[in-house]
Amino acid sequence: MPRSPSRDVVDRYAGNRGYFHRADSLRRWKNRVALAAIGLTLGWLVVEFALPSRAASAHSHGELANPHAAFDANCQACHAGHSPGDFFSNPLSVFGTHSRWHDLTCTKCHAGPVHHAAAKDQSFHNQCSNCHHDHQGRGFSLVQMDDSHCTKCHEDLPAAHEKSQTFFAKTITGFAKDHPEFRSLQVSRALKFSHALHMTPGLVYDRNDRHKWTAESLEKQFNKEARSRYAPESGAADLIQLTCASCHQLDAGRPSGDDSTARAVWEQQMNAIRGAPQRSILPSRAEGAYYLPVNFDVHCKACHPLRTPAAVSGSIAIEPFFVPHRRQPDRLRPLLRGDYAARLATGKNPAVHAPLGPGGRLDPRSNPEVATFGTELDRLADHAIKALTQNLSPPSAIGTATGGFACGKCHFADGPGQSAVLPLPNKAVWLEHAAFNHVSHRSLTCASCHPGTEGAFAPDGAVNEREPVLIAGVKSCQACHAPAPNGAGIRHGCTDCHRYHNGDRPLQGLGSPWRDPKDPLSLDEFLRGKKDQP
Image (tube, rainbow, N blue to C red; front, side, top):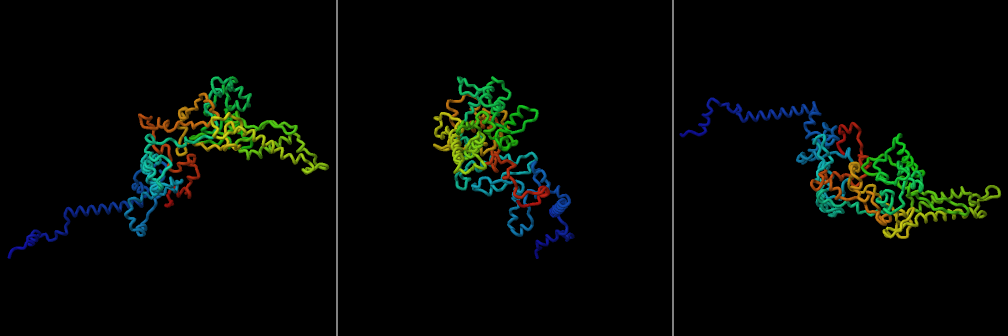
């Protein structure tokens, strides 16, 4: 009978029947790896419970940025918590563990309006982590974003809009490449004003104009306030030379006690508006990024006082008196009637000094002067309003107007044949969709970016026209903010000028109520991340 092949295999292990109880080299390595894995797991658990702060640091991808440094060892301060119960409620969630780091709770501390509610992909815009990536070191900026975050939508704005439309340029891929002109510069101003006239020494129209304003003539024509406001250190014969700072202030400030000249000017400013709160004249200190609004009572009234014409009522002569600015005729009328009544009373007018007591009655039926007193006040008020507004011309008369005084010196009428003043647009900030800091650019002359303010003679008829917006535009910015050699190489990223959150409200900074969290945290909650949900 032939020998079985299996017998040959068995004979190979004769005397070694327990070979399978001894592991070979492969099995030994498998056992070692398994034991190492168990040891590491147990060691990790020990560190997790014994040294939680060090364990959290080991989980992290790196140090947090400076504003978030307090949360280095506390992941739950920013990341939404997850528990084993999540798996039982939704077993498929195990496949999404790799993206759980996106579940941030930023709105616990940060708040603000959404960006472009009409954007098509709202899920992308609502997830902070799509643009902000922390754990990149203490000095890393979470707001200086790469342009790709913006051009993702702006390179084809109609496609990113839910209605496939846009009110801006359709394609923007970079500031130095195809950024459009600033749209705010297309606004038409509703004011007659010439920077060139006011910045020319002596405030003259041309070289042949002999009426040059000096410190002495300014004081004679108006008052000491005008001289101390615009020529505090000038000699009597010195020509008046205004500067940009004469009207434009970055910081209201408060002059020190030892600066007598600045203190005197400041006190005059405080008294510029009769009966008005001080803060309405000179606001509290500003950040300095934008200039404070020009105020008529502080910057203009000294040389352009707003006064009623001289009037006569019976035998009483009424001298001109100041009237408040920022009043339309319908709101000015009651104030004028009150002022005229006070002046007539002081002037012993028989209409208000009728006999009283026995033998004298205030009944208009027996005292006709009292009955006509109101009519006389209406006549005087109408006369003053007509004089103040008689030179108002509609905007369509630009270039043909012959000048004017009082309201018509600077303002247009609100429509043909109207005596109401055309309201001025609120333009404390001209670049409404961008952030601009004047302090960062104060080493440049104003005329570098605002041509026409350098003090040349005013063109013919300039004071009767709407002066164009004296901002050079996007080309002047690109002279510096563009790559060399076309520019100076100064940074020119989208986030250098634009703000994604609340960007259409340039004056609403970090202190704005719009940025207040809905549910502020206590100090303990802030540091420990007690609240997991936004």
